[in-house]
Length: 365
Length: 233
Image (cartoon, rainbow over all chains, first blue to last red; front, top):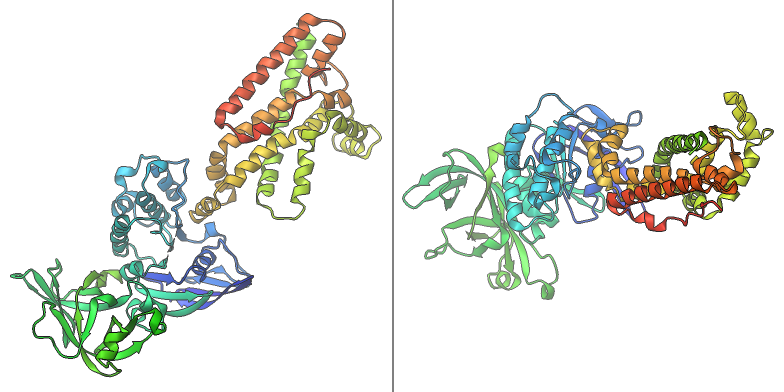
């Protein structure tokens, strides 16, 4: 735990009320509805906004204390704004050199490496106004990395991209932890992005910290807004058990009693994996269906049933299902819930239509 | 043209050059402050800076004449600092020109600074650039055309000065006789040949400068150029 924050401020309607310590490794997602203070928090950490009598300490360095206040340029941060903010009077190369000439640390990745990771080598001599949206963002991230920061701050770096560019960026971002051993704070309101990138999650609302924890446990907590979002689902860890070459499938162990079958993976058996199961892809059956094309049918126990809003306006409810140590979420209708007379503690079968592989879990650590 | 005419041309260029440099040094921080401050009296300050745009130059000239009179506090202070008298000196012309041309430098700079993207400056800070570094590496290049317009206008407007100089400068060749005054004197003494050279030269020069400014990037503030009532009367 190495980023210590104590920030309290009241400015008109808006307040910030944070006391926490954030992990010094991996990607920490800061999420919450707009106006919840995510960006303000990031700006305070960067030193762009100063909360009077606040405290920001990073890795034992006082960035802001009662006696000491480091300016933004003195803090070892890399910052990626929503809209990239490339210098329009410089080329791509010029933008990268701007950071390189002002490196915070001598040691760190070289230009060539960073350009390779972010796939911007062909763009180096381009003018900034000749770049696409996704290219802008990749150059901005590369520039922040070439500063050789101790901490990388990203404020919704994928906003404004269309779906395919966003997926491409997620693929690129996912590989970054493999290359870097600096902590990343990633502001986003997209659960999809968070589920693919984050190890640790901070949920904010109205300037306060609502919940904090690892992605896997927070994703299935029904008391948090994450589980009610469109595209909500459970993040699971599993180990690759074996490949079924004949059918082009791979078998994963969620735990001793639960196996999942997915399309053939390129990974070695024994590898830890992170999976995502969307709540809308899970249906519930009272007994094990013998004749179904769905392969992944797991016995589980109903842990909680949560209604998020009164019936007439919302036909759906969320059910949390326990698989030994881990959980699944299912979105089903009130009607089905009543028809099957589902209740807490009941033994049921979860039929899972799709399992998405997020990443090779070990790499994200 | 006589030697005095050439002296007037050299003096005018010297005055305009020095005034422009001083104006850039004073005007840049002033414009930056105006572009970013939220103090309540900002409109009043902007109005004061813009006054030379609307006032007859003789008004400013009149007050400066009083301020520069040998027994005034300003003149006494100046004498204490430099050992020279202020009245009818080149230094007095420089001070007057700086005040008179201030809006022509401050306004284009201020509008440039106001259009700068704040996150861009913050990004520069996050990349390790301190305030001076940010000014030279980001602000100056991005506001290049504003600086160009500001210095050109400041220079050209000082060259075109008449009323203020007439009031405070006297008419000492090589010291305070600038081009516009020289022209006035030639006309008074019916030396129309020389007057044609001086007047035509000024037109050509001004046309060149203004074309250059418009070329730079169609700076919008030019549309608010004051009617330059400085022509010799």
